[in-house]
Length: 192
Image (cartoon, rainbow, N blue to C red; front, side, top):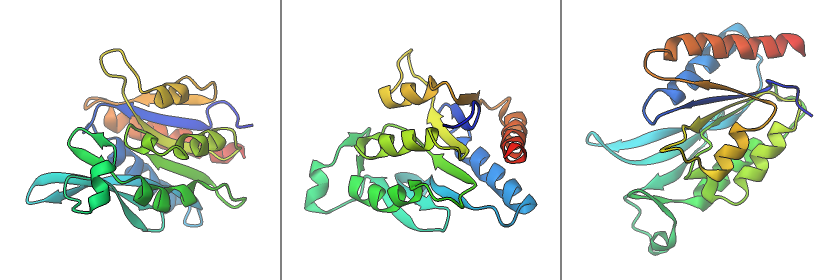
């Protein structure tokens, strides 16, 4: 079982900089430890002419897949679940993201950006994340903030996990929390 605090969640409103925080922490970790073995993924907007048209999943070894899009012309995309105006490509997401969540002995850190509504349409995703929470490998992940007093059930389960430490960021504390999260991860490695 993972020790308390080995699961670090960064929460905040859309666009506040959760992904940027994760990337900065990873850059600092890799600069101080070039042999660091990280598994996982982050998401990035797909833009066309200054308009967001979707999201892609990018693994730590730069494999990419579509998470969601407004521009998928395939006939089967009409049956895909939607979040806002985006159609979620569960098959593409699972093909790229799920292999990254397999526990391997030489992994030092798992990174998941993000555990949100789109990703949770995959019935295999939350069980994989829960297995990581129960492992001895530190997990750094982003989760959306509860909106209007309501949380996504899978996210609520993670937020309330006894081994989780949550950093809620906003534009005023984002830089300070970047340093705190980095220090927290470094402390976890020092204790192992």
